Length: 64
Image (tube, rainbow, N blue to C red; front, side, top):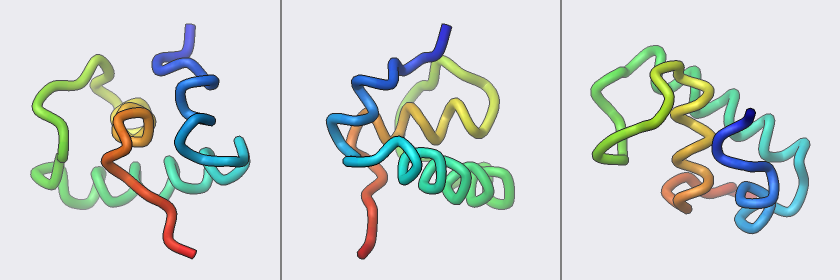
C-alpha cells in the first residue's frame, strides 16, 4: 500500500503527474545529498518514499 495515500498528495499538488515529477526531482536531491532531509523521521527508507512524505507534509513545493 502506498504511503502517503494519493489523496493526501493531491491536496498539495493539483496533478498526479506533477506529483510524480516533483517526487522524482526531490528523490534525486535526497540521493545526492542524504543529509538535506526536512522531516525529523520518515516511514520509508527509500528516497522516493521520503520525497512523497515531504510532499504530503507540504515541505516541498512546486515552483512555477
